[in-house]
Length: 464
Image (cartoon, rainbow, N blue to C red; front, side):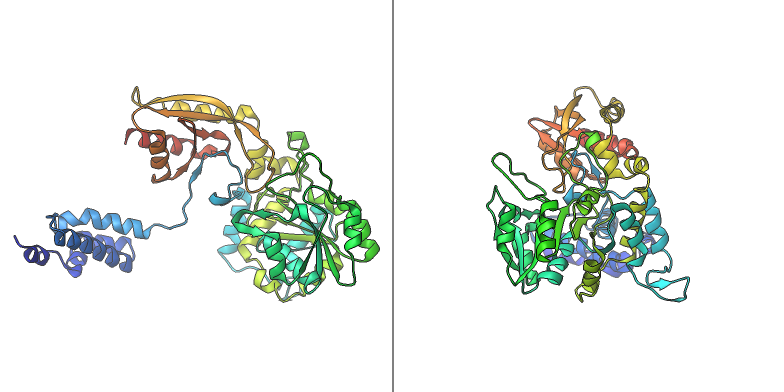
């Protein structure tokens, strides 16, 4: 049979659509997706024929490929997965998981009209930020609060409001770069602020700030070092002392905390993470922090501080470009509400629960996974529960190691890299980590309701 004859036997798109499988596809999927998938498979077979191959080209033979293509094009690109890496606030995996209460509130608000900018009691237009201000100020002790779409935006709008065309004074040791190439000097440049560096990389004194004050000083800015720490021969100025000279020279002091913790975690062995409440008490005029890191809520940038400064930010035209939507409001309000009861917050906010859960609970979860793998054929893999270390991630708690328990898998019929790839590319992706010649499933970041699914994914990857 010639190439031309083979090409002429390829089914037409309409023929595929009018077939029994085609009618079923149209009932179950969007027509545009079905047509795209049919054309894709036909084009693929045409290419094989032109390359001198002889693929099966009957409609029955093509049906399975078409259906697979339809499912691929119908699947959402943003997918849930299982985080078995042990990194709790994993930036690449969506950072913090929302609590059940936050999810319920998002569903309720997103699925109906809401009073986002409507004052129900007075029957007139209201202010968007009024819904969440009270709960934030109650928890943090600040006079006022406002929320933007992420913490980078929070820092940017503070700089734009108080230091556009003026100098923003920052210690050289705090000119950091964090994930996604977010660099403090570049953010300052974008805001129109003039960077005034003081001190040295390892030491900055109070007199460095006071000596930098001039007629064009707009802001003292203190940046949390986030994902690294300078140790040894070092010195930095406390917020309390910086606030004193801020008051003396009438220069506002803004502190960017980054992660934004509102619970003292020292009793859980987590040190050196100052809470928002403490920084407010120390006298900072403005404090910025993230909603989706240690707070455990949705992506947001939260600005708290003295009322006169927050109200000035509210008048900045840039605020409209940075405002959050109703779903973020719903999730953030529900998250903050849970912090009214610290015990419940630690139990029900996933990020807090993962960071503070006892080792016994983690080991018990690891054993549940191991027990479900006993159905594996003999000689498939070596399995063992081992002690290891988890990390907070997301630029939070950079020096803190969290003792954990992980399931060690040493595959015997495939390489550990192949196992990692199969798990990552499975129907439910599993993100794990390789350590030497073993794959580690860290039970700290595996949710209880994911254990059975995870075990099934591991079995499928090992016996494929």
